[in-house]
Image (cartoon, rainbow, N blue to C red; front, top):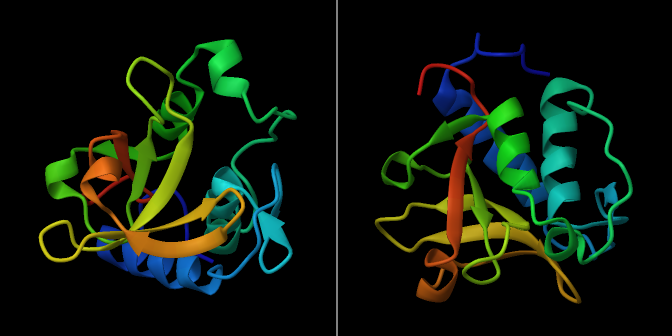
Amino acid sequence: MFPRPSSVAAETVRAAVLTEARTWIGTPYRHQASCKRGGCDCLGLLRGIWHTLYGSEPQDLPSYSADWAETGGAETLIEAGRTWLQEITLEVARPGDVLVFRWRDGVPAKHVGILSKSLTTSPAIIHAYERVGVIESPLVPTWGRRIAAVFSFSKGDI
């Protein structure tokens, strides 16, 4: 486990995040779950990585429906990211950082993934995708246009 919040260099944390994220590949999609090989959704993947790195989850989560962002209207994922992670710009994002996506313009962000390959070479993300599970897939332009926020697990040394 890594000390929290920032006594470990950001690059070390990014490497640990990416290594752990890759161990989740193949986990089936399960709404609200966070169990490696058992099932997870995109937030569950992020929660599972956090748990592995820091030994517990940052906060308890209430139940949430599949349409939670559409019905609530709040930027819940971005606000949680600002609470528990370090917000950074897309220009400095590196593998191991967290990308937050909107499904379309004008709606709150509701999908997260881990940047797994550099934005300047063949960008890719690891994410839990409904009906597919946890995969590593190219960060195609359609996904790139949907990025709403970028975060690092490390609170310091960015």
